Length: 123
Length: 111
Image 1 (cartoon, one colour):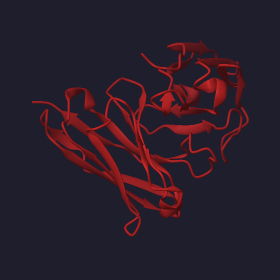
Image 2 (cartoon, chains in turn cyan, purple):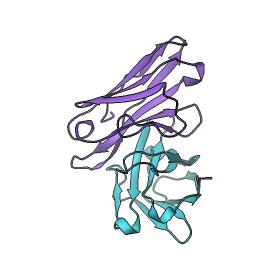
Image 3 (cartoon, one colour):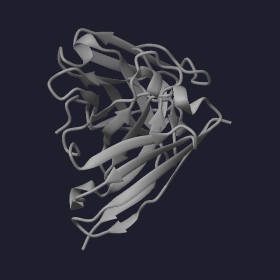
Image 4 (cartoon, one colour):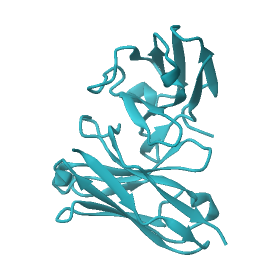
């Protein structure tokens, strides 16, 4: 079964840091371009960023609101995706989803989603 | 303010048809594929349509997608109470800040 399972969410103070993990199973993780998408309470979806497969360069892209503060990385030996979040702001409060598009050629849509992990930034 | 514009809400009776629009620009919808997602309360989004009009395995043909110029449309026929959810369009935006962008979401109410 294809599965993504996020972990690492919690309560953190403004200015603090948190690292999220996403464990993948049921597909060839090393070939997948992986993304993080977040959803603030009662709000819509917001793409956070992505990391390409190593065969496609392994580079990262980020949305403007998180660029310079968040870092996406991957460990293909552990089938795990990471999101390191630094200098957190109250507006980063959201459910964070790990996602990928296994059936999509252009890497611009997502058919596999994790259950999400909640990050709350508050003093 | 989302890059892609969707109506905040639509409604229709069971068995009827509804369409949800998604408006963008040449830097996003106009030159890239559009996808659509359904999000039931408290759950992760689910891909309904990708590459403008393709349905993943398991998605019924009651759901359809189309694109024309800088706009896209999701159609749902034979509405069921289980279709009541939030729907989002998404695409790649190849402007200065190249990124995936989503619409603000449309709440579908099945009356």
